[in-house]
Image 1 (cartoon, rainbow, N blue to C red):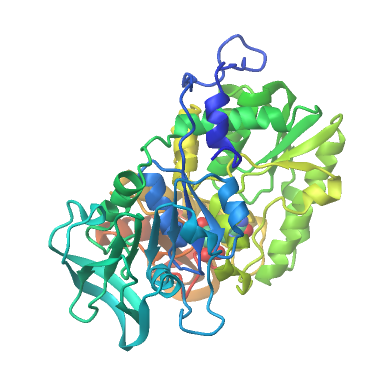
Image 2: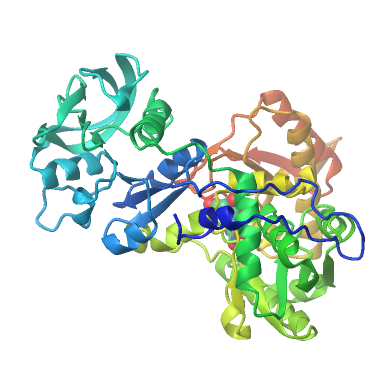
Length: 552
Ligand code: XMP
């Protein structure tokens, strides 16, 4: 992908160019830089028709060590070709291909000679564009089905003759286009997979990207490696090297670079990459909002100042945030005020530095996709997520966003390659507005103290339980409710704390974690005994959707 950024840069990154730690003689980053002399790995372009699972397809490709990029379905061919992909995947989508204005692709795809895998809507588009026949199904089909392969093909190599797949579709292919063989069927879907082995174009009616499709990983891997011939060469160390080169090129014009550290893994990894590229020109600003978890501020400053030897400015803004939040109970109002205050403080700090021209942001790939793909264009705003988004325009700063191509788990992996402490790499996600959105109702110093103490118990107990896998996020929420209790012989009328623990891949959807009862009991007993003013604990058993992860 010569023009798409980092894989191409990996090829030209030959020298290593280690940075010295600020003010010390040791190498700042523990992992050695690798030399890359081979050609850049070619990747797969995923054309999105508004699929719920587009990100999952990208993940499966990355897991197969193939670089992947999601583009809107109507991306002009010139844009796709510029990325020089080795294959194209067409996603599913909520629409029907049978409508007059059904979504399509630039037809140059069909004569490009590139291998194509169409999934669900993608299969139907192959049938429609290449001369097959489609019809609305008598019954929409959702959920598991038994797939039977009926012909051999590289796509189904190693896939059992019968295996469980996940279906979700309304229309069905009735006749495959000329040159295509039917490769698999289910009881209700006679054309569940088709392929033109010579042209390397395949389509499947089911979803190989979801975990419920037993042979899904094998099918995606077969397409990428056996059919398209893409080597499994996408790796995190090559990402780190090429990102460092990219950053150097980007900020070559000079000027200082600033970064807001939040304590989270994204800003930590983004800052570390920039530090490795141009360490001396980077200043990290850490704003102690007073809305952080127990010991969080100290951990962040220690990690960046003492371990990574970065220039960290710590601002104690606890009183300012409390003042701005006094009397505010509306969640959106809280979020907005916190965002504005944060920007004001950050701006004040930046003004104290000379010639600041760049701002580092830990934007991840899901954020990039969300703002670009058809599925999200019509999306509703649920919450004003807090980040430093208002800053670049206000301060005329250019953005450095080294994580724009990564998923969260890849960010953690990059953090490890960069030698960040596990306490930061493994840190659970934490919302920008911090504990303010976990104190329902008014945020006061006392109420923050209550939620912080309860949260520390939830966190330490869940981590001590060494669950496998560990929930994605786990925390305490201070509700605005009081209830009657009895302690000793006396009546109490005190606060209700809710405990939330979720399993998730990316925070976009989530299920509540089935924590062992003994663990829940320990958490409950400890909170009511150790946190003053709390006499009752509730466990949140809602998934997202319909709830969200945070309560505000
Ligand atoms: P929700 O509550 O929207 O949360 O279901 C999804 C994920 O996002 C985190 N979250 C935020 N992260 N700024 C952030 O950087 C925010 O304002 C924010 N609000 C929620 C939340 O913790 C979960 O991981």
